[in-house]
Image (cartoon, rainbow, N blue to C red; front, side, top):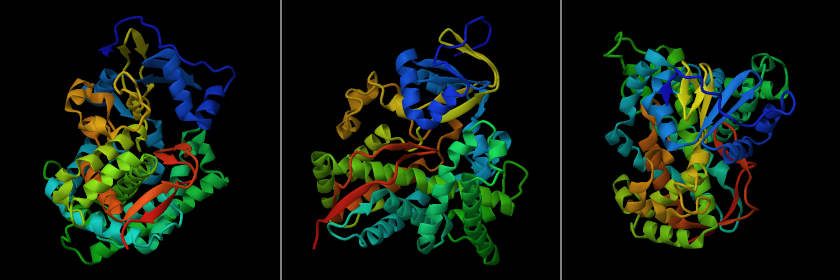
Length: 450
C-alpha cells in the first residue's frame, strides 16, 4: 500500500447490470456476494454502490496496512457512522482525540487483574442459567447465550442485576441489530425518519435501552463510590492526560450502551457457534468434556491454562463464524495497492469471514479442526492477519481478554453438566452487525449428572 502517485486503474470487480442491482444483491446475501467477488476477482476487488466506490481487501498484509500500519489514513466506515443512532459517541463510533480520551478512561476496567476478578461471576451466572435447562427439552441456544452474556456484562461492568429484564433488553437489542440493513441503505437518513415498521421498532428499542442505561447512571450518581465495576470507574474517572474532566451523563450513556451491546452480543454469538460445532462433532466434544471434568469442580479464572482444548474450540468457532464478520473503513486520502488506485472517500472493507476461511492460510478451511490451534509450527507459518476476530491496531476490541475468559469459562461450565445435540438442520447465517444464526439455534441438552 503506497501513497498515490501513479495513474493506476480502479480495481476490477462486479458491476451492476441495472441501477441498484448491487445494493439488492448485498441486501439479499452480503456474505455470498463478497465471497463470489473475492473468488472471481482475487484479493483486491473494486465496485460501486451507487456513487460510492468500495474496495474489498483480503490479503493479510493489506488487512494489516488498513488496520495498523496506515490506520491514520482511515476513519470508520458507513456502518458504524450510522450506528451512532444507537451508540452515540461511544468507543466503537468516536474518532480522533475524543476516541483516545474515552479509551484512556475506559481502559482500567479491562486491566488483566480486574478482568480476572470477574471470573467467579461468569461461572456462577452460567451455572445458574443452565440449571434451568431440562433433560431432552429443546432450547434456543442463541437466546440462552444472549440472556446469559447480557446478565454477565450487567453484573461485572455495571454491578446491576438485569436478569429479570434480560428478555426485554435482549429483544430491544435484537430489534436494533435487525434495523442495521435499513441504516446502510441509500437514503437511509430519510427512511429512518418515516413511520415504517423497521424504523418504528428501532426507535422503540432505543427508548427501552436508554431507560435501563440512564436508570443505572442515576442510581449510581445518587450513591457514589467505587463498587469495583466499570460504571463506578467511569463516574470517578478524570482524564489525567487531557483536560482533567470527567464524563457527562450523555458520554456515560454512549459508553455504557456501546459496552452493553458489544460486551454481550459478540460473546453470545461466539458461544452459540461453539456449542453448535461441538453438538455436531462428538470427538471434539468428548475431549472438551474430559478437559472440563479434569478440573474436579467449577472452573475458575486461574484454571484457564488447563483449558487449552476448550479455548481452541472457541478460537476455531470464531474462525469459522467470526461474530464481527466485516470491518469497514473510509479512506481519508487516495492510495495505491497491488497496482490499483483507490480514491479518497472510498469505503474499504476487510472481512474476517472471508480471510478466516481462505485455504491459503487454513488447510481444510471450511472444516472444524480445533487441533490447528495447538499446532505451534503451523501458527508460526501463518500470516498474523489471517486471523483477526477482535480487529487490530489502536481500535482493537478493548474487551478482548474479557471475552476470551468469559467464553472459555462459560463453555467449561456448560460442559460439566450437559451434552448438546442438534435439533434442527444446519443453521442459516444472518450477517447483520454481527454474525448470528438466522432464527436462533435449536439444540437438545442431555444431563451428564443426576
